[in-house]
Image 1 (cartoon, one colour):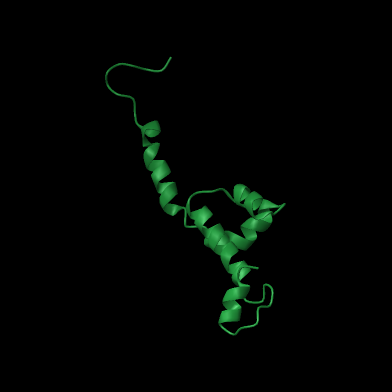
Image 2 (spheres, rainbow, N blue to C red):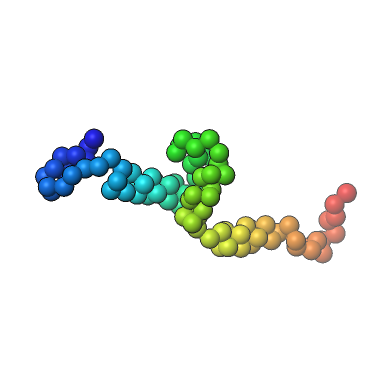
Length: 92
């Protein structure tokens, strides 16, 4: 284990997974991937979870708010709601 020398040098006793390092690193990894737009399904695969629903339940607090993305999506598609121009062109 790569942590043991550091624990030994600090005169600490290493107890496997009792220090929270494993969980902390998994959360850091998950938060970085989610922040970069990796889907929950992909993250589940990367973390070794069989059920993406489990991944969502565990890491949902790390998902950034999608309000701004939703507003941007509506703004980007605003041309779909524009009225026809007055140049006489119409859909067939």
